[in-house]
Image 1 (cartoon, rainbow, N blue to C red):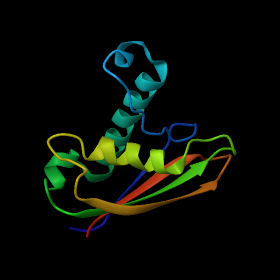
Image 2: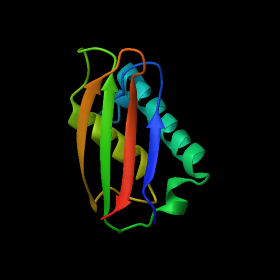
Image 3: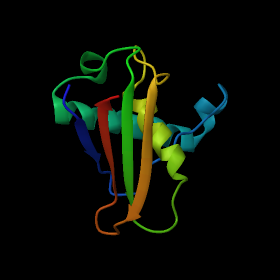
Image 4: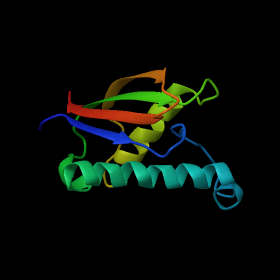
Length: 122
């Protein structure tokens, strides 16, 4: 497998992972925003590769996931949660994120906030 690199642009800062209870799923606007962002990440994966993640990646195989966020300003989420959100989006069922390793970094770019995700076999 060659490295897969996708770039996610929404015009705003990347959205972090959101842990929630069952009840919050229906009432929490942050959770809905997170779910929408996850669908954008998957759509960008498909646009870049032409296939859904579960059709390209194998369940129970070790992958290294590197993320780099470019935030529009200094008011942003914890980068480890942004990284976790990207992993959750791409490695959703039938895949899982149990066998992932990786790293994350961030910088600032007011004109082009984005999240760059690179996946490789580890």
